Amino acid sequence: MALKDLPSDAQPREKLLARGPGALSDAELLALLLRTGMAGKGVLQLAAELLAAPPTGFGGISGLLNTSADDLNRIKGLGPAKRAELVAVLELARRALAEQLREREVFSTPDAVKHYLQLHLAQRAHEIFAVLFLDSQNRLIALEEMFRGTLTQTSVYPREVVLRALHHHAAAVVLTHNHPSGTVTPSRADESLTQTLKAALALVDVRVLDHVIVAPGQALSMAERGLI
Image (cartoon, rainbow, N blue to C red):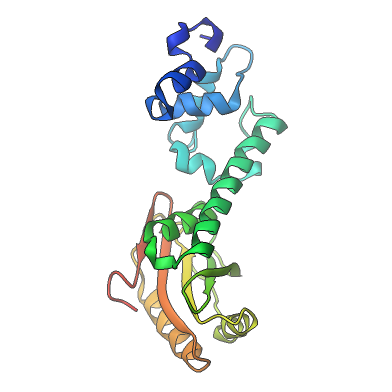
């Protein structure tokens, strides 16, 4: 059924204006963004299919917003304009979280840190090692993706991390990487790498505050587990 054929109080836009965004389902909110469906498929059906579990969909709002424009390109009914809008929403979310982390101490909002890193790394098909560089008040200076690996292994060079920390005049860092396998349990290699980088950065008086591992829908703080 097309949106225009729904009763007025059931149409997503009217429902949002009358009752607030919390009254809408994920599919209804997405339908508002998409605006139109395609021949033989209404926009609500298209939205529901995008949110469905893989391989037909992307596994919910989080999965959808963590996709790339190339991933969206395979979905029939999503033209360049719709793909651009969805990617823009993700970028706005990233920038909003980055603003929070630049304005206040990172660990005053630990969930924001995890969400920020998930938006950047969780849906990558290969392993990425990145570093959050922080100032003396633990506010974000920059996030840099430093090393890229295969699905099972990443080569990380402590010297390069130290050089970038000095470049940013960082007082502290948060290390992070993704696990494309879907689990966030740290491996022995993760623990060993953390200690190696902690020792290397200590030589230039830069503290390692945490190492966050992310995967689709979840994130783990090694500091919270007592592993830093």
